[in-house]
Amino acid sequence: MTVCIATLDPAAITARLPQLSELLHACVHDGASIGFILPFGPADSQAFWTGNVLPAVARGVRLLLVAELDGEIAGAVQLDWDTPANQAHRAEVRKLLVHPQFRRRGIARQLMLAVEARARALPRNLLTLDTRTDDHAEPLYLSLGYRVAGVIPGYALEPEGGRLDATTIMYRQLAAT
Image (tube, rainbow, N blue to C red; front, top):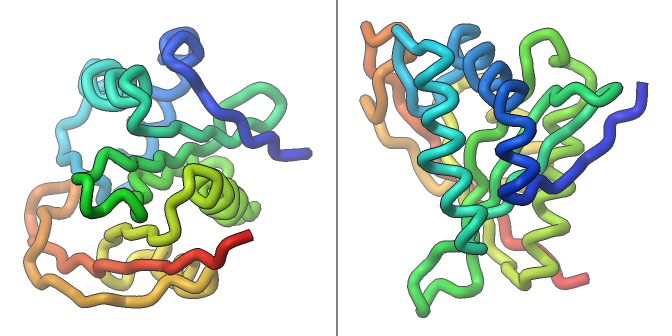
């Protein structure tokens, strides 16, 4: 199976809303620490895409990339460059998601490489992100050249809401192409 990376514009986000909502819902219910806690229903997932992502993409300050396998959305990542004037050289990687049934196939790596290429084209040469400390995504980011800026203890509730997890702040300086 070949993974296709595609950019979704506002019309495509609206058209693919059921698949995007299923992706986010599945990831949250699988324990992903991406800003949501349980209970988290399909309506909550849809509200995130329509109330947060769609308006930012429509304003031209965020990019939504999806990884597709046989026409099905298997993963997604966002690049947010809505920054102050003195930070026009950087962007933030947000919400790297891979559906649990499609994990361990290199999809997250492909999405990250694609988002980095798009950042260079903006041009943005500094990327930042945060991830739950010791999460399965942390080694991926390190292998891609991200560096740890620091760890903040007790940063966010785990999805089940019982414990506070630390977060690792990371960055990557992109070489010009």
